[in-house]
Image (tube, rainbow, N blue to C red):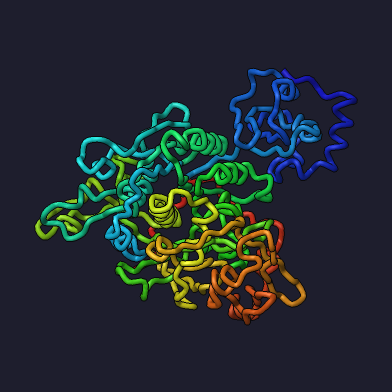
Length: 557
């Protein structure tokens, strides 16, 4: 099928040295005959003639038009020559991916939104995950028709049902109406943030919670195509993988950017790597892709401590921290409850059967006298659980003000997020009982704690992009400062300045014209500086594939 490159190919290989940035780091230097499936991005939408440079037409597996790309299986040795083509912008591996509700919703003020009549009615939310099971809580108010209005599987050999159990749990946090926990004798009702929204089920993770990056991109593309048909205004991505390259070429980041520019709010999990100190970083620099995109709303997790009040809440020890690897973007954008969140269970799914500690007793919601484990609900922890709370909040905002752009939704959420968080907190891993210290800096909690009622009452209408800012690092002073960008909303206004959006509590240093957000003695709390070169370097290898960001047992409450 592929001939040896010969003299011309050798010249192309030589010239590819200068085009090395066009090949992802995990592909660079690989010249064997081994076949590898790759995502090839073109500078412009490729014509049929352009695609001929890839070889026989039948070898192209998928066309990802939203990012001007295709997936194709090729021998490794031809990749440098392809990358040298002026038509191609980037080549990367099609990487593998893996992917208490009443307390959580009250902690972010969803109950106040419901009392005002905001339930997400008419808004479509695309859940790109492991599928969504048929549940009473996802039916309409009469209990007859399902609010899962469209389902499609991108997983070969599997239908859109949820065999892993993650997507159903996520969908319940967004859209559950509490039908199966609202009996006369109930003591708790597990109701999602936007209990009247419609769910668009786009399955990309298989029965084991894994999948392929190109399938996620294809699902995002499908959501864009179906936007007007189902009024899809929000995409929820409770999954992620290691950052390999800048968001400007990362295929996943390019896909979420395309959705954002199409008018869809994209909400992404930050990652569950906040406990990682393997390289002395104390969990900093561990944001997962595509949460490293400056366009999307990236969500970290809080521990609601099992109470309705935010007063006792702490930063979840497992929640990934910024800045993002390579690009040094300030992330997460905000935080929401993600610890031991009770939501819908897909019967006999992998998570429910393999993690028995996630099961809850019927007495939790049916009242005294009930026995046995629930067949409808279970609990998971992770930034995967915090993310759908924000997705649901976005749906409520868009029901109230349908003309809002994704940037306006993001800006309102960040400005109105609660800033009064404890400066320092300790989380204890529920499995190992090891404790981890956290501080509420800009790279841990972003702009603060989601406050749905405040966001709904905001009338701000920004006209500039709400891209998350970059930071720059001075290796001499060991200080990081926010980069001033007058083209974005928080670059030049008192209303949208640093102290208003992020709050002085998240800055490690005096809030001034330079906006110091990082200082060695404050961040680390001691004289250890070994992690600095890692956090502010080009990348932090975490060895994480794209996966659903949950299923751990979380922190002790």
